[in-house]
Length: 304
Image (cartoon, rainbow, N blue to C red; front, top):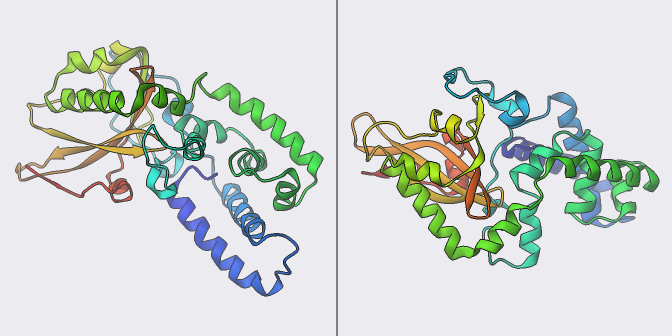
């Protein structure tokens, strides 16, 4: 709903405070679950009313032209979508996970979260309550303090708008087709290429129309030529970088570590979230926010 794990933490705290204060007035006319989600929904709607929507760089502006240098100026972190750890919703069981986890992971994918941000807050709430949490139309109407016809209308508009922003195939469908073994091979080859500075292998793994972005920097690029000249490419002699596998937004991710100046340890640099099309990488979103590493159970330093 909020596209930010930090904002979600704040919203959860506020939901619990409001629920505690309102508990004496709870009469059981709805389930406790529905009652709590109504409070949580209103907390989220209030939060969205106080700040602009979060986006990814690809939704912020046009791509950087090939050969044009990227600016070193970053923008406030509060305007960008944040990565979300699979383990926080207990969906980190790999491509062979049960169907229930498969569906929950689809609702975490970066493309879906980004598409949600283009909806009005109430459309966003209606879509999440109905299609992600499987609330009935009546429960959703109660949560939004409106009517069933109003919810159904908002839901129709939300579904049409979100569908325009999604790829033809979800990441979950792609990952299931590849299987855990093939997926591990792709991740290991990608990480190995970066650690050894093998740019030819890196570029060969990218789709022709691949994109790369690095929030909180607003620039992004599309295509192998543009990516070849971007910040994604490793610089300096090996072994400058270390890569550790992770999971974020129901997708493949890698924690990136950079050796410190004195060469005594590798320190967190960025979290790369990969989007695949068949066995090619079609998008790399490198979240240059090392503070998120503990949430993904990534160590704060690695030995040399």
